[in-house]
Length: 222
Image (cartoon, rainbow, N blue to C red):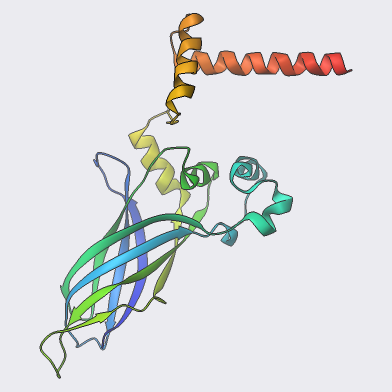
């Protein structure tokens, strides 16, 4: 029966893709090396392990949206599920190298986007857990099938720069925010009533108004 081992060797953004797409370079090794693998259907669960790195004060401020105040992080910082994906691996003997493609989003309603955006530099600790089915040949039978044990994992430190450069290539100097339709209609009505030509001016006007109300309230309280 095959003894499969998994190792992520590198990561890169796929150039010229329609949407942001990362590829993890996955090395799959079989023992014994002489046992041919006919095909492999690989299911992968990718999760972020935020407790495995340090964070600078500016990063901690942005991460408050996910984890709360740093004083609570011992209880709130848990692994973040990023995505489930799969890949079909063609036959090999010994080892092979495949691209595990990860479609990415820049939607700030998604926890992984909030986490990646909060980081200034360094690495993103990833854990990829594997399952699936392997078809292989042995001396006893021409073709056999086996399940990949659930304890198969691979760890990788994804450079923050890879994610940021990919998003900048797809969304230069911009970000996306998805709103419920009723919230959008209220915001759009405010934009029209105030004759504001751009959404940036709408947001700037609302922030300035909120700041003025806050300063006025503080003055009254004093």
